[in-house]
Length: 345
Image (cartoon, rainbow, N blue to C red; front, side, top):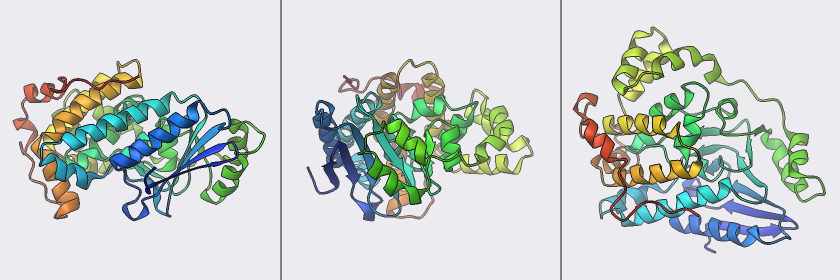
């Protein structure tokens, strides 16, 4: 194991701690492989009854993948990023079918790849500090790590709104949208995690500490969100947002105007296609195709440059407008990559 993932056993509890707090526990390839190795080892170990995932530090579980690595590697051809994505998506799929209770503590910031290692688990906990998001369109990417499936299964058009705008979810929103199962105040987490090594089943332990779900702001916005995002094109979605007369809708339109036009169109297509998928694995295969194409696209490097490297917040997308995005170019994102599709167990 490397030094960025802490793995230990406390009695019958296998504990995994993402330990890169200065980078908000952003995932490196080595961290993905270390988490996978621990899960593989414990799957057949009868001494381990439950697995718990947490993040080191006070800020959150995980802010996503190491996008500076994406930026640097994409400029060199993207082979390292594609290898990272293959192993990351395989880990996401394993978590979704893990044979033992997998308790993910989504305390604090849980975004991108952090969602991938938590929201597919069997026991997903949010706290009053949780901020959950798939913010990929901010950096010229598309929602991945199984996010397209999660978003496509959210009520109404909430997932379309979240996927396109990269908006964050409150703990109540995360519960409403199917990204989490239980709300537990952060002050109760130490006692809850300690009790998981006791005689009670995991479900009973969590139930002892869970509290009623807090309000979900997105629930109050369903009217304009469902009406506007039901459109079949990004152009029509934006037009409906602008014409709605709702201040929050106008703000959403302004946010979409800042995103990569290409990635907005690819994201909408990905979410619509994911609605017909019968499994997470099917969505991950699609996401691998799309992500590999995104790694080779101008907007990924440019988006990360603007948001993280130079921090000028002024990405120069290419093409620069929705009208300039060729639908054939969008369709090409869904073709298998040259080295072949993602292979899952």
